[in-house]
Image 1 (cartoon, rainbow, N blue to C red):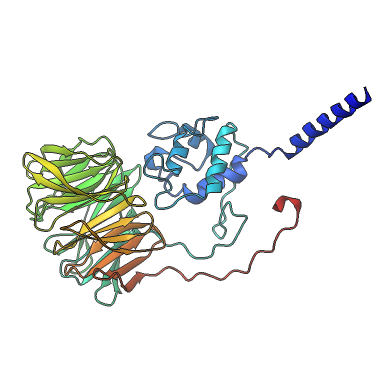
Image 2 (cartoon, rainbow, N blue to C red):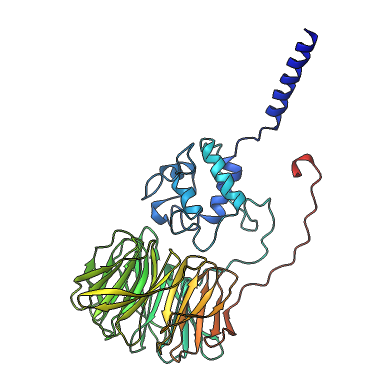
Length: 457
């Protein structure tokens, strides 16, 4: 009996010890909300609810967005928020970056525990980095360099950022002027075929699109146009300059009459957000690229849909038209680039690149037609031979690249980063020639004092 009692006591001690070492439930207030505040709320707040999802408050988060509920308590694997964070659904979130593995694991554990709330998080101190123990910020944060365009004479590079467009003089990179007053991030830039007008498009996510047309002679605003019900991602001038097309997160493409300043056609065949538009140089075709994985080809004169190009297996993120032929090139979240031949009765895939390490975000032909330039979420800018499809040069960058643009002389490529940088490289060898927007100098911080209590292990 004594040995049985001893065994029972040992078992009870073991159970007690196990109970004492069981981790505490994940705190929404202290652990989960700060992750959302740092990485999600910029695009998913009450003011900017991308996909109609608000991550700033528990009740709003649990309600979900336009794609339905994003959190299924007790089922992390099938929760949309986890699928987007892990990249199982595209685009991977957050755009242009990723959560730390420990943060993803924490969100998964919180959902598996029932996704409960223990109160709302306190407002964030801007001088701190939430969720990292109050470590001081090591550098100022710049707004992303989301769009780029070269003027037709090569003398100006335009960079679209948050609520403004910066114009840099070439050569040298001296800032000429800043065009302000935009509603939100300027996601698309394009100079008119005659070079007299700069179109800057964007708008507020979930609220509406905006197009601002600027007079390049004196920097004055010609006109502001609205009409889309969500932000604009793509802009393209028809080669004659009399019309342009815009594509939006609202799943539509609009064709605009430049002289009248009105939308004259709404193209509604896409089933998801439309990220890019491109007119062919002949002016015959308008191509549009969507998150529904398709490219639609339209008669540029009538707006009639001609056919659909299928082949990408994930959202199509960028398009560009060949400078002389009826060809387009597309890039996708499936990590491939595809070259397409367009004809009146159908299109065909001429070439597909090898699968790249990460999502491709933008693409451009060089004006002489010799090169194709692509950018990626992993920071790589790659130069490809347009004729053979061979990779010629890879230019590494420290953060995701959102936009690229090639100068009229086909000598330089401008690169816009998620970190806010804007840099020029030589096409021939990838050598950096100028930094238009430079990241703030990092501040050296003293090493943190190691913790010695039991919880530091």
